[in-house]
Image 1 (cartoon, one colour):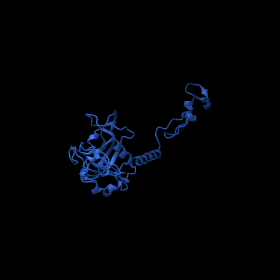
Image 2 (image 1 turned 60 degrees about the vertical axis):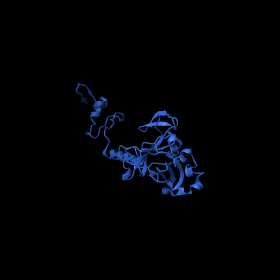
Image 3 (image 1 turned 180 degrees about the vertical axis):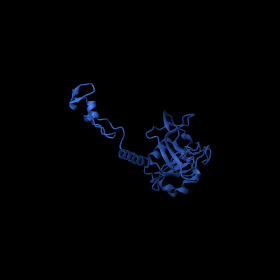
Image 4 (image 1 turned 120 degrees about the vertical axis):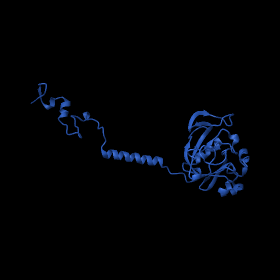
Amino acid sequence: MIVNREGRSGSPSTMPNQKRAALHLRGEAAITLASPSERPIHLFRSRSESTIHLAVVGVIFLLTSCATPDRDHRVVISTSEQKLALLEKDRLVAVYPVSTSKFGLGDARGTCRTPLGELEIADKIGNGALPGAVFKDRRRTGEIVAVDSPGRDPIVTRILWLRGKEPQNANAYARTIYIHGTPEERNIGRPASYGCIRMRSNDIINLYNNVGLGAEVTIVNEPLQAVVPIVHVASQVAQAVPGIGGTSSPAAAGSH
């Protein structure tokens, strides 16, 4: 027989659950209550559980941040011809007219020039955006601008953000040098940008859909054929490859 503090007698089986639970305390690390439903939720994971959790998070981070770079495609841009060539495993896929900087070539901070040299595609922005969709600070505004709208010159449709790989273009990423769409398609084929490489909306969509992150981008101030020897066979593939031999569009032909 047990006499509690209130002067009532009884057995352990008739004592309140809270007091029966108190009889089973075994140190700070283990708490056992009368029934499983009354057991408290552990507030702290064991050391081994925390280690496993951190390891899983680390693996997920590596898998998502270290995607295999695109080594199958290469982009070559000629500022002298205002053309862009897309190659897949050294096979010429297409040539597009473009527009590089009207302020000339270079990579100094605070300038609006187009950098030269070896770069890579660091980011792709604009999946699923409609042609003419406006971007500000790489975010869609919800506005759609028609081709050659008077007084409008925003970034539209798609963005391929470039990162320099050489000292001569080390500032390209910080300067936000892109390959992007423009509504000023009337100016494609001649220098008219503020440092970026502009393309017609349909062309940037095609390029965007073909190249992946890490794809090499080479910008030169010489004819494409000096960097891409396959362009020498233009007469044989002009029908299959847009922009070759000046046979595609008036903008491309007018760039010479």
